[in-house]
Image (cartoon, rainbow, N blue to C red; front, side, top):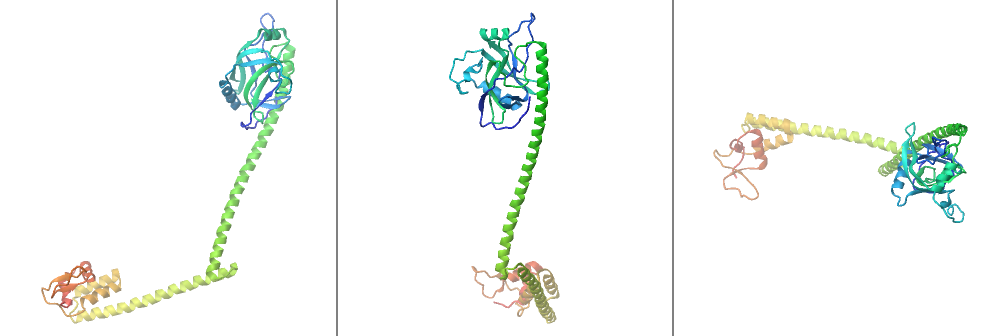
Length: 376
């Protein structure tokens, strides 16, 4: 037997194979040949025929049994493929049955691999007589298969004496010497099949490796294309920004821009530092003078100094200015917050929102604060 394994279950064809039997049956107790009630149709794995290499796999087992379960008519047999004469290019002819009914069954071989058998075989009287007389010894299955030779269904079985399957044994045993010769032929063919199967497996492994490598290369090519697009977009943006098209010129322009930017940042920081220093000096001078002439209590100055540290010199100067702006208000003056919806009462000392916030943040009561406010 020789081996072949590929798969495409979309295109199922039916091929008539005039094959030798797949299993040998013993001679009866009185030395009489007997028509078998069960026999093996397909061995496990690949097998060679005059029409090519076919194989029976675990998937074949499931397909064959599913196809049988969907049949409306019984599985039958004929002689010399007379049922299929017209499909094989011959004139239509009568096709009397050799088997009126049989049931396919999947059985494991000694290695646990699936084989196809038929059981409960019901021979016609004439077919039984042919077999027991030795006029027919062989059978040929008609089966569906994929384009790669994997079996998908069993259509029927024909009695024949013109085998197409290599290295298989007859339905009805002849002599012991014939059996030994058939067994040797089968073993030789099986060794060839094993070698072919090993070589095919290696080819498939190499093909898988090449496919994986091609997938990786394709992914790298896609990544390169994405990088090229991003590079082009970035170059266009830099060209628009610098007015340069040459990469060296663009790099020089960008480098100069970065240096100028750093210099500008440094200059801004210096100006800001000088501004804060100048404002701080003004604040210190004004606060010291206000304390000296009694307009700013020392405790309030400490609060203003704290605001300068936490909120900035601008806020401290604003609060100081608000507090010591004019003469002290009369004792007991009312404190009023002026809003858009409320007019200022006559004779009230008004605190604006900034002054109210100052009183809240510093903890100074509005009554203390209004001493530095004029009467409205």
